[in-house]
Each structure stands twice: as structure tokens, then as C-alpha cells.
Image (cartoon, rainbow, N blue to C red; front, side):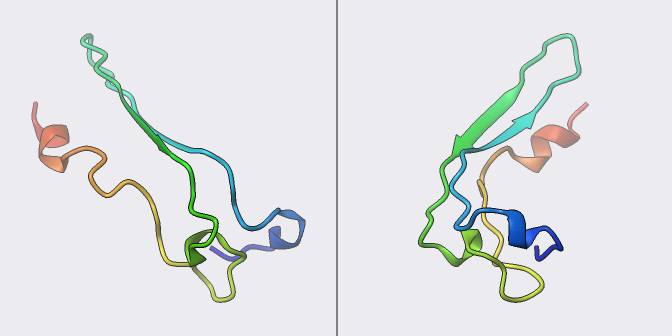
Length: 69
């Protein structure tokens, strides 16, 4: 998303992105996945509108699994 800090940030965004879902049960089955951005994708360029096209890990973890007791 566009912000007042865009002028001081480096674009294209080229840092590793890590998603962490921490299991707070005693089992502690944490789910962690990472990706490196495609710097040619408009998702990682300086925003020209209020928000760039979203990017991430589409099948990170099934919502049904989170909703289980």
C-alpha cells in the first residue's frame, strides 16, 4: 500500500518474505513458509495507486485446519 514513507524505501522490494503461523497449543506444530519476490512483478514496485496487486503464498495453510478444535 502507498505510504508517506515510500520516498525513503528501496524499490523494487527485494527482501525475503516469511509467513509464520505459530501453534499455541502444547503440540507447537508451527507452519512457516517463505518466498523471494519477483522484482519484475508490479506487486513489488513503488505503488502508483493506493495499493499494488497483492502477492503471497495462496495455499499457505487450509482455513479448515485452523477452525478445528
